Image (cartoon, rainbow, N blue to C red; front, side):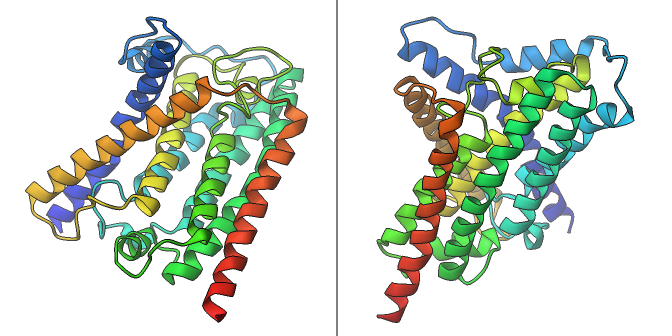
Length: 316
């Protein structure tokens, strides 16, 4: 029991420490691709430390909900990111590592983030919250169709079971899995407010979504929200790696050597995911807000076609 607690606590600490590093790596690669020096790799850690040292400035119309939302958002996102198997399967809390539960935790964090944007009553916060809810209403059905496809194939929505099934020889090459992967990638881009859906580096009133909801935050509240957004990006990269690249995951009760090997494989997967994300964002322009429903509608159709193809292939 003590070893299981240590391994589970180690996973929670790993995702918390690697989330800012992943964001810093993506920024560094994007800058290098644009022939710029770019920020240092550890700059996100310095930004979080600087925000933690600053005093919190609250708007006059802010309620208790505005002060409580950062802690709720951070806690829900951290728990969701910690449930995804990173370097090992069959951990102490793996029974709760269910895709439905992870989607529910992310939905809880998004709900309170939208409430925080509306609480102060500014026009920017209202615009950002309305756009966030619009994106969520289109992204969640697509995500549920992907979950439905994977659950039909693996026979469970539990991530450790999915990873064990995907690494077995029973899977093979399936068109439905390719469609589900593309749909999951599109949903991940939209959920993390990345290009082409949103630009995390802009503060233009007509384009920003996530930044509009957190304009009134400062100090440790803003640090918690920034860390939660970094954890969310790591969560989706970990989720894609766990389901579609499950190689290197240490089994339950593995010795320390296999756990270290699984951790090294996980870091390599994060590096590959961050590099591909940076290349994608530098090769495409941001789309208009009114074209986001078309983008997520394509993800929904891909998820639906994946499930239909799976039904057809099983009936043959």
